[in-house]
Length: 130
Image 1: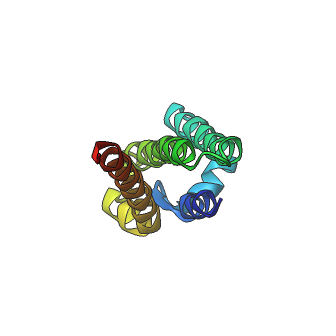
Image 2: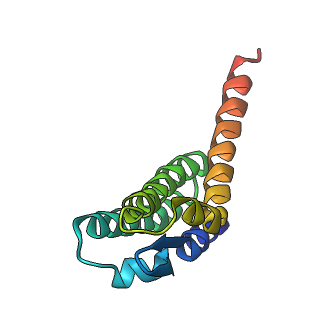
Image 3: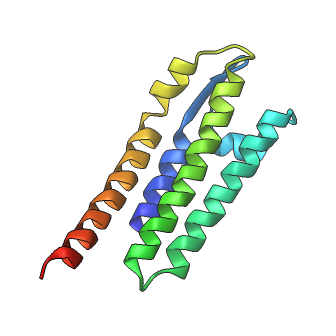
């Protein structure tokens, strides 16, 4: 549960620098533009949010599956941020600024990925021991 909350907070406060200013992803999900890339980013964002919440509640008793599906949902959220940040950079703004201002999202994504790798390695080594 804590993982999902941290990921959602980090995603919500991730700043995108595009056009004439900077705005957090939470605002873009609700009030983003109508251009095709904004819509694609919004759809991916909402899919990631729904997937993260669903994974958290559907797999309460299975920590291994929950972490796998949380990672997949986090990847979709990260993809949403990437679409908006990279394509929004074409309008103007700085991709580097977006990247730096969204550091909590990058760190959270990395932590979830490393937890998944560590869990898989533990499972693999526990099966390999006699």
